[in-house]
Length: 121
Image (cartoon, rainbow, N blue to C red; front, side, top):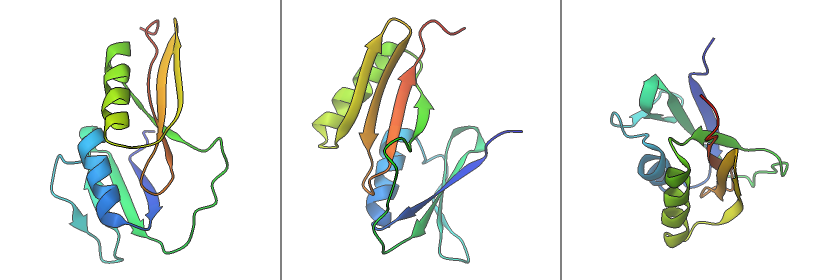
């Protein structure tokens, strides 16, 4: 089985849409509004990101996050520089011989990780 989509509750749909399109490539097709009001974004490998409207404040445990695999340690560092320059909060960063990672908070407070395991084949 493959994971095919992720659904996020968002307060600012436009900001979340821009964030995931700009930094994570969810722009392979125009966003599509579903009958239930959810905005569907389309990414690589037919992976979908569903943004559902939510007015409440998210209560997320500190360990909760989701991640994207980077192609190299340099790609992780480049992403970190870009996201920091654009004013997003970096909540963790690692540079170990076997793991390079950065975690950033998206517009709704979700933690998103970009990581590379240089020793993996």
